[in-house]
Image 1 (tube, rainbow, N blue to C red):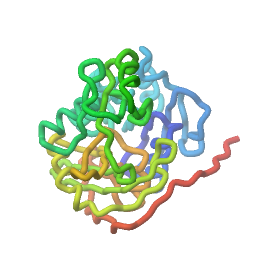
Image 2 (cartoon, one colour; image 1 turned 90 degrees about the horizontal axis):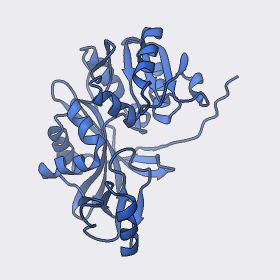
Image 3 (cartoon, helix red, strand yellow; image 1 turned 180 degrees about the vertical axis):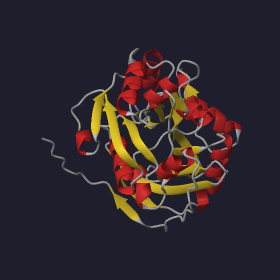
Image 4 (cartoon, one colour; image 1 turned 120 degrees about the vertical axis):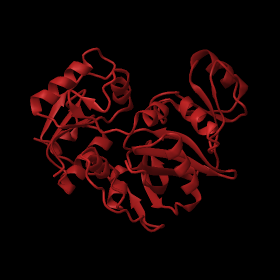
Length: 314
């Protein structure tokens, strides 16, 4: 056991449920507390207790989180949503919250990953592979077709393809501050990469070629990390990485190009854990100053699939 009582936010979501299962299966904690903005979710089947918490953008969020931590004697917090991480960052409450460690990557990685234009700028400054990216309202798209995406928040939300000048003109008026981004092809060369750098500077990675299903990775196959190793090491250097992030990219004719960095645990965290890439457990161990052991990368070609499960509560 690494911690006595863990709090995972967003406990009705797929990532929180995956982390809860990893924590249970590994024996990393004794008690699991969850919280979410509503109670209509399967969390009760995976957590010892589920609490209600205001949305991250509400003024009572911090107070509500403090209440839950105190009520349950929480000794580690794992924030799930980018909105919550952004609020904790702005409040200066990352690292520790109410005297309790908060499990995230380092501040620079979070600041960069939360802002997709900052991601583009930082990686471009380090001459790492990125698609051209421009701010709507400040510059036109460099070429059509292109992708329109939110500058902040989950990349799959409000993402669409822009193909005509008429669409560009409408977008200039309705999506000011969002991003135009290069359309990366081919579509079947999309990869999600787990990237972990330890406190002593060891970098570990796993690369999965994925197929999306409803915005999540529905199926994936382990890829050889060699073509991506230099890029991923460069990203870890550019972000001064400590902890776990998720890098999304496409392998184009001009090489791999990163279109997003998630500064949190991703929806493939349990896939990766089952393959020996234990980034969640490593993060917990290092937060306690404990060794994380060795890592042996899985063999390319291993396939994995996401399947539905039925949960009955009552």
